[in-house]
Image (cartoon, rainbow, N blue to C red; front, top):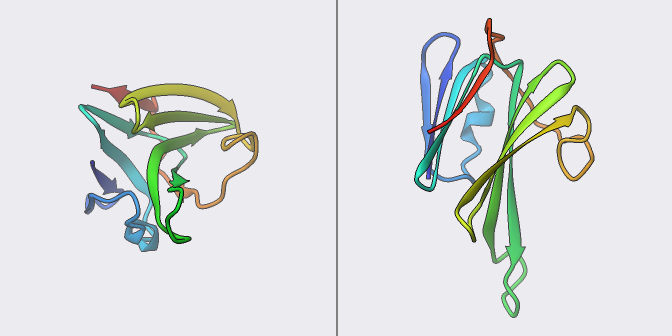
Length: 127
């Protein structure tokens, strides 16, 4: 799994681990976000804001803090809607969902949105 973020000034950040939150430290508007999920690539471009959630599970019998990743939710915002692309690591399936802003994660708002560059026609491509 890897991802590439292209910023407004055309600089990029390349990450490989969903736990790598260094991209959150970069305070530049995002122009494009490309994420490799299994055999598929998800490309977001032209959105108002970008975010993600890493979902985990606790391994029975392990020490607290030892857990695995079961899913990742990529989110983009435009006006009062959030387009979610979800990847389930157990099934290797990608699903999509449109939800109302403020109900984007388990029916509640999620913090950590990064500013984007609004394009003429925001797009989500799954290839």
